[in-house]
Length: 218
Ligand SMILES: O=C(CO)[C@@H](O)[C@H](O)COP(=O)(O)O
Ligand SMILES: [Fe+2]
Image 1 (tube, rainbow, N blue to C red):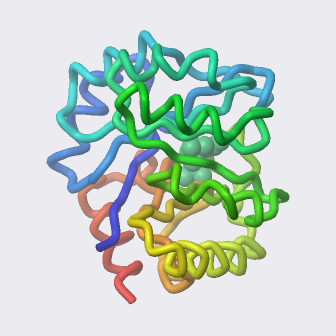
Image 2: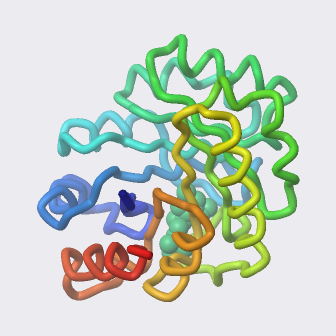
C-alpha cells in the first residue's frame, strides 16, 4: 500500500488551518511537516507552535521531518506538540542510536533520514530502533528541487536491508516526487511518498494525490 504525505512546506502559511484540513478529504495518508533550523539546512521554516496548530486542524498522522542540529534537544517538545512520527537526520546527531530511543520513549514512531550523500550502511545497527527510513531524493532545505536519480539505487538497497531485517519499517522518499518519479521510487521499493509541489501546486489536490498513487501502483 502506497501512502502519500503532502509536505506543508509548499502550503500557504497564512492559511495553514484550511490547507491542512483539506488534505484528508483529498486522500492524503499523512501530513509531512518540515522543520528547518537555518543551521543543519540553509532555511528556517517552522517550529513546535506550528506543529501544535496543525495538530488541531487534522486527524491525519503528523510526520515530522526534523532538519535541525542535535535534534535530541527538541524531541520531547515535538512529541508533546502532537507529532506521530519524528524523523531525525543521521548527519545531525552524534548519537543516532540514543536519539531514536528518545523518540520512542517520547511516545512517537522513530524515523531516520539519510541525505543523498549518506551511505545506507549507517542503518546497519539501528533497524530495530526505527519505524521508518526516509531516503532524501534531494538535498534538504527547500521544496521544488529536482529529483536525484542516483537515489533509486539507494532506495532499492534500503528496501533489501529492511526486508532482510524482518522488521516492519516504512520506506519513505522525499524531494522531487511527481507522477513520473513516483513510479520509479515505488518500483525501487518505497511505500511512503512525500510530495510538496506536486500536491499544493496542483489545481485539484485530490486528483494530484490519486495520480501519484496510481503511478506508484506497480
Ligand atoms: O524536506 C523537504 C525539503 O527539505 C521536503 O519535504 C520538501 O518540502 C519536498 O518538496 P517537493 O520536492 O515535493 O516540492
Ligand atoms: Fe521533508
